[in-house]
Image: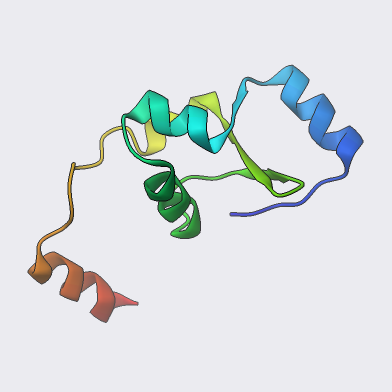
Length: 84
């Protein structure tokens, strides 16, 4: 979910809530920045777009914290592809 807000709105939001950049999210979750970007693109990790950067609410990290490590098996990946 990508939402673009004005500078003032985003600044106020960031001051009220703990927001993290994609490198900070990657470090907290122990994954690479590209994987964080993939989670954002897949809609599994909601963000607020601030210019070209995506900011993630700290409380939203729990949405992806219980994911399985590594790649899904080919069978699971094929099943997901058919569901789309």
